[in-house]
Image (cartoon, rainbow, N blue to C red; front, side, top):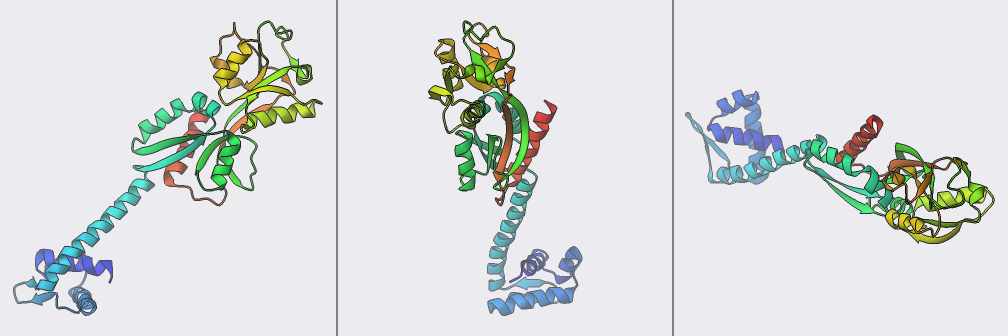
Length: 295
C-alpha cells in the first residue's frame, strides 16, 4: 500500500469529488481512479461509489478514511519530528566531563547553549578522562570533553582549549620566591594530585619520569578544592591546570606558572571514530568551538 494512494483517497473523500481532488492535487483523474482501484484490490472491498453528482464512500471507504487519516497524520508528525531534530528544535545530549573541566569551563557555555536551543536536553556524566574515553568506546557516551592526547585512530577530536599545567605550593615553601622552577627541583617534594583515572595524573608522572624521577604522590583526590586545602595546609605541592588556580586565594597558595619543561593541558571534545553523532551533538560541538574561539 502506497502512502500517496491514501493521500489521493483522502482528498477524494474530503471533497466527494474526483474532479476537485484532481485540481487540488494536480493529478489526473485517471491516475486517481487507478490509485483507488489499487486500494480496492489490495483491501478486497469497494471503497467509492461514483454517481453523476459525487463520489460517495462505501462502509469500507469510511473505515479506510478513519485509518488513512491516522496513518497520514502519523507520517506528518514523523516528518515534523525529524525537522525538529535537523533544525535542533528538539533532541538530547549526554556529555562526559572531568570534574575539574566541568566546573570551570562549562557553566557559562551551557547557559548560552540552552538559551539558543531551549528544547535540547543536556545531561552530564562526571569522570576522569580515561574513564570517559572507555565509556565512548563502549557506546555508553556519545561525546566527552577530555584532556589530550587521545588515540586518534579511535576518536574524532575537536580541540577547544589550549593551556598548561601550573605549580601550586604553600607561600612559605622554599621555592615560593622563584619566578621559574624546573621540574627537577621538585624531585624531593610530596605531590598531591588528581587520582589515577585523571589524565592530569599520568601527564605529570610521565614528564617527571622523563626528567629523571618518579613523583612521590602522597595524596590523590577527585576534587580540586580538597587538593587546594591540602596544599594550603602545607602538606605538599600540586600540579594542576592553570585555569583552576584562578579560583584560589593568593595568600594561601603561591602559583608558579613558569615550569621547565612546560606541561601542556589541551582540551578537546571527542567522539568515537565510527560512532553515530546526533544532530544535537553536532550542533553542540560547533557551538562550543565557536564559543571558545571567540572567548
